[in-house]
Image (tube, rainbow, N blue to C red; front, top):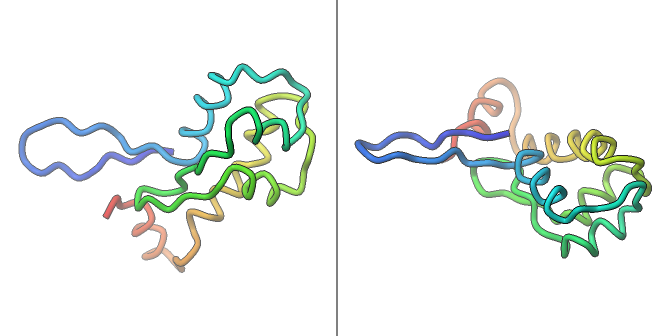
Length: 108
């Protein structure tokens, strides 16, 4: 996902990327060979912190993969499908209801 930061006058701002939008390019650049296990993914990428929201909260890739409950991935798509709900749930931590959801979308 990505969110555009608020505009404050002139000047252009880039979108703030987090979750799958951040992880996908990392996986593509690493040129992983599938099937692959979670440990090999972490070793190949160096266990980066994956931003989960526009506020700057992040989770280590190793932790997110562990939370998927899966250890082997047949394809990049399968890995992304498994980790997506983990990243989404991390984004929602500390929020409740519709107001919390809106707050999570805001970059401040």
